[in-house]
Every structure is written in structure tokens, then in C-alpha cells.
Figure 1 (cartoon, rainbow over the protein chains, first blue to last red):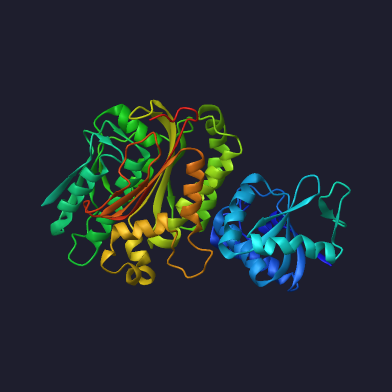
Figure 2 (spheres, one colour):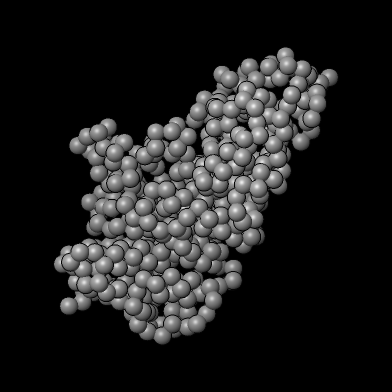
Length: 143
Length: 307
């Protein structure tokens, strides 16, 4: 089963003050800990960044990298902007990790370290979470 | 006895070493300091936040063992336009808590004019970084896109760079600091519009912060310059976590994309990533000692970065 995480909502619930930006380590830590409480270990999770403004490296590391390292098997990023991915990708590379990104058209691609990236889409297809489209891309079978 | 520290007439990153030398000399014997800015004609954001850092360090010294216990003195610029600009840039709001201010300061709120993208703002905790990032996104996007010709998407990267620069204070300085962001015409090399981010603190500095984890690795080379090199060029952090040290690397990437400049001064050294339009020195050592760290980020108008 895919777990769904709406990051903006978690941010609102986790941190005092109405923030749309995922910045600073304490904020990232608070958001990650909220997510971890609701997330079974070893799952496939969709993390939706819709509504999130600025994402800095500290939060990308605290949330995305640490969840991938310690909690989830596959992390699918949805609703990310170029700026979000600019923050996430170097952090993933630094840890030797990779995550799946969903494009606006629903197709998937992988960002981060090359070695784990190669296996990620295969795993989603093998789990029947994703499938090849007629055009040859890969997309989720169920949102 | 009061020791005089003269504030340079044109107070920016270039004249900062002159100011630091005066500060180092004046602090040698523990007397009360007078920061004399009466002849100041202009100060960049770097100068303003650097002056606040000096005030904080001087106040801390005075309050310590053997100190006079008195806050340092500050004479305001004699030129009414200059003092008005410093007020609009938010300088005096912060200076009031650090200095015994002498001279007439206009009662004005920090500016909402387009040049002051972020008035001098204290950074003491993560919450302050949130406020800074939120404010800058509201005010800077139009300036960055229309005046500097940056892709509108670059605003988010700008906020990210600002966030990481501010977090260096929260995580490493061991004290609070200040940030200011302004847009202005930079005549010195470019004769173009630039946006300048200046961040300063009077904390422990990079060498002290990194010493436990890095000093042994550098051996005899260890010092302020080696610490800056380790942090900015090698991306090392005092934390063992492999995810740490990304902030400065991210700032470098962002500035490289927009032909920007980053310079960091800490202790007796200064390091800079120098774009082709500038002639700064990449690494300088044996400078006059100055407390904490001072960070300068410059993003030039695009399509104009010619040497």
C-alpha cells in the first residue's frame, strides 16, 4: 500500500506559526518526526510538495534524505518545483540515495545517485505500483 | 579613557579591513570604545551588519571580566541623508540595543522602498530565518526578475541561499547576528544593478566551529584560512552527519548559475569565489582579527557581467 504525505499540511501541523516554507533544520526535523509517526517502516510513500514555498538544503536533508535512509523503501515526490528539486537532488547525491519524481503529466523519473536510481523504477513496476505507458515512459498505476 | 574606532567614509567589504584593524587596535587594552561614524558618507549592507557585530563584540568584552561594563559609544553620521538612509535600512533599530548612540536619529520605520529588500534584521533562532525567507520572497521577486533579469524561478533559489547563510549563524556562531539585503547600482566594477546579501555575527567564527573535527586533518596549516577553505570549498561541517555542509555548497551553486559572488571573512582570513566581472583576491590571510563571521553574496544584473 502506498502511503500519502501532504508535506504542506504536515508543516502546518508540526510547527507553530503559519509557514509555507520548509527552511531550517529544526523545522525539517519537526516535519520528519510527524511523518515518521504516521508511516510504517519499509513502505512506498508519495510525498506531495504542493503548496510548499521555499525548500532549503537543511530541510531537504532532514526530511527527504533521512526518511529514505531510515524509514521508507521508495519515496515518490509529487508537486515539486524546479527549485525543490534543486535542493533535493544534491542532498540525495551526498547520501548516495535516489528518489522517484512525478512529472506534471504523471510520468516518473529518478533523481539522485545513479546506482540506486536504476533499480527504483523497476521495483515500482515489479510491485505493480507503476507500469509502462504506451509511449515507453513509466507512470503510477494508482495515485 | 575611550578608544576610537573610525568607521570608513565608504564602508563596505573593501574598507572593512581598515575598520577591523582599527577595532583590533582599540580593543587591545579593554577600554571603552567609541565607534565614530560622523564622517560616513555611505555604508553597504555588509558595513552596517559588520558595525553591529563590532558593537556586540565590544559590549560583550565590556561586560566580561576586567571590562568597563559600559556599552560602546556610536556617533551617527553627520550627513542627514546618510543617517536617514541608515535609519530606513533598519540599522538604528538594532544599534539602539548595542551602542550608546550619540547624534540625532530620525524616527522612521525601516524602509518599504524598493532598494531595501530586507532591512537589517536580527537572526537568533530558526524562527527568525522563517521570517527572513518569507519577507524576502514577498519583496524580492519583482526586483530580481525586472531589475536583475533573473528567471522568476530564481527567486526561490535566492531565498534558499539566504536561508542557508542565515542558518550558519544559528547553527555555528554561538550567538545571534544580522542579515540585510539591498539592491543598488554597483559602480565599482559593473556599473549595473546588483542585489547584495550581507550576514554578520560576532560569534565563534569558522575556525573555532570546525576545530574539533578538522584541525588534526590540516595539521600545521590549521587556522582561519584553512577553516574557510574547508567550509566553502570542501563543504565540511562540524557535524559528522553526511548531510551536513550542503548549505554553503548550495550557495556556491546558486551564485555560479547567476555569475554571483560569495565572500566570507572570519577571524583573520577572507575567502571569495570570484566571478569573472570582479578582481577580488580568492584567499587572504593574516588580516586584522575581527570577531565572528561576515558573509557577502552579490548577484549582478544578468547579461551584464562583463569584466
